[in-house]
Amino acid sequence: MIYFPSNIKPVVSQGYSFTMGNNVLSIPTMGGTPIQVLDYKYTPIPVQCTVVGGRLVKQVMTDFYYGKINSGADKFFMNLDTGNGIEEHIVQIVPESMSFNGGGDPTWIISFTALCERTPAQDSTGVLADMYPIYGDDIDALLA
Image (cartoon, rainbow, N blue to C red; front, side, top):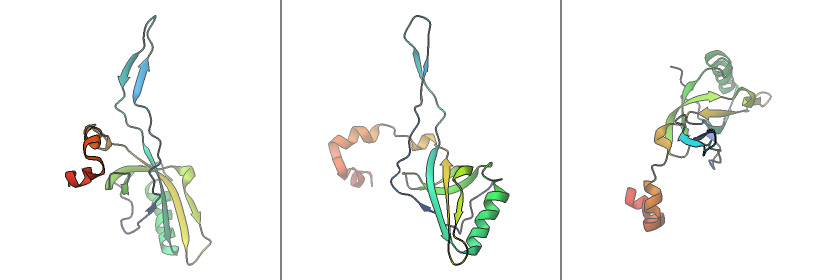
């Protein structure tokens, strides 16, 4: 199991403006209405990450990216917030998104897109949607 270096804390772009895929499959039939079924494979969530650090952080990220995860080919575990708080996700870096900007000391800006594997636990069960019209923004207090 490969883990993202724990002492490097990436800054994650806030807003959660990721695009979800459609999990309804439509199967055409001959001379009738298509059959629709749910696809239980979950689409990945792209998260924009930025790491700011010095020469040593750049070297650690370079070694991790090119050595440990084979230039983004391998998946690894990383703690990220995809909208439900910080959780451990199985992640893969989009190779074309990796960039090292700087030019030397003292600061390097390393940015990449991490594709997080979506899990069934991240899906809404519909309960909150049913309770929100009754409790409104006070639902947080109720759930706490």
